[in-house]
Amino acid sequence: MPVWLAAPDAEWARQILQRGVAALYLVAFVSTLNQFRPLLGERGLLPATELLAAGRQRGPTLFRRWGYSDVRLVAVATLGILISALLVVGLPQSGPPWLPLLLFLGLYGLYLSVVNLGQVFYGFGWEMLLLEAGFTVGLLGSNQVPPPAPVILLIAWLLFRLEFGAGMIKVRGGREWRDLTALDYHHETQPMPNPLSRQAHLKPRWWHRCEVIGNHVAQLGVPFLLFLPQPVASIGAAGIILTQLWLVATGNFAWLNWATIVLAAGLLGDRVLHGIFPWIPADLGTAAVASVPGEIPVYWTVITVAGSAALMVAGVPALRNLFSPRQLMNASFNRWQLGNAYGAFGSVTKQRIEVIIEGTEVGAPGAPPEDDAVWHAYEFKGKPGDVRRRPPLVAPYHLRLDWLMWFLPLSGIRQRWFFALLARLLAADPAVLRLLRRDPFAGRPPRYLRVRTFRYRFASRAECRATGQYWIRTGARIVVEPVAAR
Image (cartoon, rainbow, N blue to C red; front, side, top):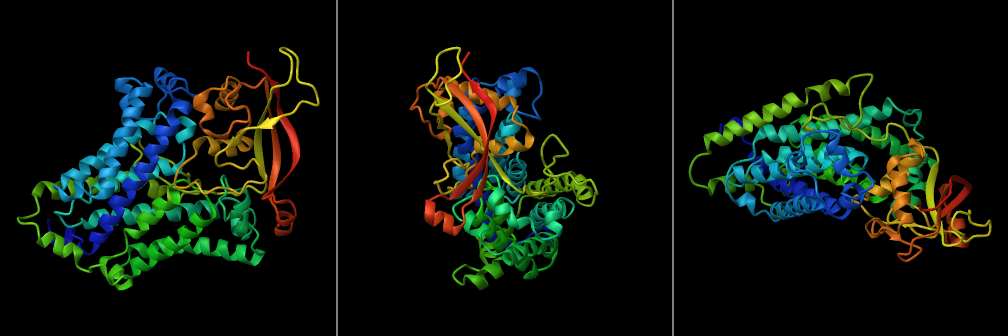
């Protein structure tokens, strides 16, 4: 490998990037193993078999050739978990340079096969981010070769698209980002608050103004530092890490923030890390390469250059998109979901509307329940429901059903998957009930279901002390009248 292609100051970057991204794949495949079948399996809310039969999958998938079955889905998810675990502990990285690449391409192919069948349940920006990150870090090779400088540059380019794209979508989006009021609402109205979200929301307004300004600096200015020489690039990466840690502390955004942290940590040079943590060797990369006899294989140089060039070409549409007045958010420009455009929260909702599903065992068949019927609410694992329950910490795990419940008031209640969910609850389907935190009927089918919406807001400190409630809800409205199983 020519000297100009090597980045010996990035050996710790390789370890952080490959093991960190593999850990996120592990979380993603565990999430798939636990949730795909009740949501998208043979008897799921949106069966993947129907999607394949209609030829409407988003892109390449192994299931197109094999056919979908729940058994095959379990095999794919289990294989993904095993490969991810191997890469997390670093065993393949001790082998030839092609071995980590082969395994990361395996993770990429397996997860792409899942995502392309996932429909709305896998329609989030962090899915394509994980795919692109896995494809890219595989090109870093093993410990037997120095990390390739072009791949480190590609990591910086991916992080730049992720952060700068999010910043641009905000200043082009809702006025609240421009008048600095976005964080007056966001902590309360975000899809899935966590235990500290309420405390963040109750901060004074000047604090929220500072948060927005800090966000704009971190997303619109700091990303340019990533392309400058060390230690400036590390300063930029550290700034991104700090802002992402605040987002981790105040929200549940699956693995989006953690993926950003891993990518940014991968741009901290070995010497910079050694300066911060003296026990970390500053010359790990040079020592690792010197311990391996022989020259760097020519084939690996060819693979590195070809793979890097392909990713650079794939990213050209995303570059144009960054500066387009019609900027797309979380968009892929090819079937392989590489070189994507990213972004989040171009606008912020001003009030939180929660959809609450309730059931009752009262009522005669064919007759609506009486006005005094007792209704019991189904509780979800992550989304707000019980006003006395503190929002939980969930991320980096992704509760896909809970997230879509947040979108319901925004996209309209009459979604196919939602009415399929109601039908499964009426039948007390065990697989669907396992996706919930609490079934008020302990596995028995209710006689009727209804759906109400409420406006939720965080309780003030005084209200919380007086009532024990974390949420105050008002404005009850029935959006689905009582329905019974057919």
